[in-house]
Image (tube, one colour):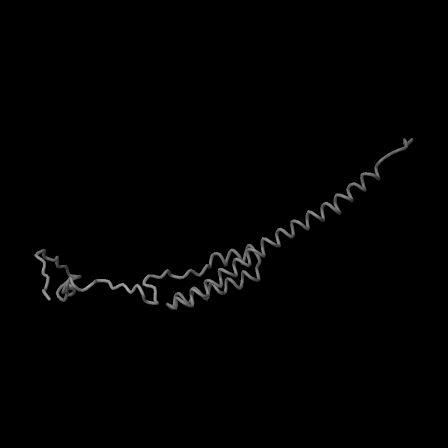
Length: 144
């Protein structure tokens, strides 16, 4: 194995002096990065998301009971991420996302159900009673 030296001098500063004195470059025949393509662990993995904002929206704007549960899972995911336990953080984040979707779906369902019941109430009771009162004021005979 041959030692590679450089003719370019490395600048010396107060901050990197001790580091530069102990630095030896790696030989070129040794790879800088080893790729394990067939391994089980992914080399690059995304940091799991907690879906905290989605759970917050589901809690305050949609179906509150499922939204609170989603918010609890999102907080658990955040704390697991801070501990460095990415697998638990991913599982709790997925639970938070699923419950947020359930809360939003139920919220939309109940809003549409309320609108439908409001329309039925308006058409059956208010509209009928207004027309009944209109007939009370019909005058068929002249009043003196």
